[in-house]
Length: 375
Image (cartoon, rainbow, N blue to C red):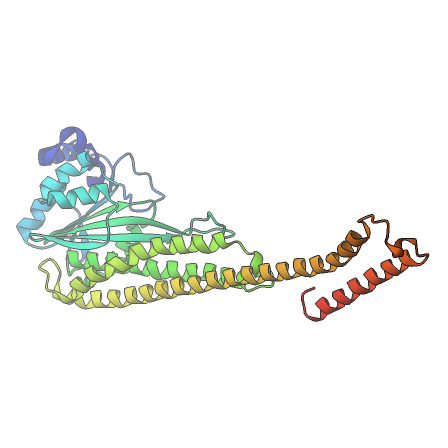
């Protein structure tokens, strides 16, 4: 039976009753796991819906509502519902079923939120910014380096709802990894929350390592012999992309600190130690980003200094040649005044002498400028 395919008709049926009716209509359909990006979404925002008990999948009987009622009646296990960019109408029935706060629902649907952690009664709502590195053959002034998305997580006593925005950050591999460790998954919904946080922060470290390669390449180009001619647009582009990464990483510090240190009803005390490890990894990513920012500032200043030095060298060359050209200009200007009483004009050797004086003076100036490094 497919609970994932059933939920996509909530728009037309609406509410919890609609969820039941949709599930009953589609019981003959085979189950489709849409957690991997290569699989078709079948026109639905539902990626997957699985019930877990004692850290293992269970064969859910009935629809999503029946599964939730069964979990709550037994007092053990939980339901993990995964969504991808749901609409208001698609999320309405789910919000009613799990009694989600309207403000959290609005944030989950609209996206474009800062990383944060909020508590609404017994439900925990967390927002994570996902990042991925965009491969490119050559860094240019318009290259996209970092692409961002979002994962919203609702955590209750017996359920986890993940809402993903963006084309990357699939939780399918994470789900499979968790299922391979039943002992950790048996700790409940907070184990899923930790796994998602750890997955997101690990991606931060992966992206920072890739960005460092771009920064190293730019640094090499700037300090090469032709560094003064390097494109400063690449440096600015890296700083813009680094700012996008910083907006994803830095605000997550406070939520992870709360998850690691403050008692929260929805978080198993045994899981808090794991959040401290995630917080340490996040600190490493923050330090790398801060060092990258300082390094890019230094590279940009070095590039501007090289440009200034190159301009000064060009000006010195222009000035030296102007001084050399000034000698024949001055002499020719004097003899071009056409006065009648200029004795040199009627001297047999006057022309040769003037040409010789000009040549000697220009040669002396040229050698002097060459020795001083102006030419």
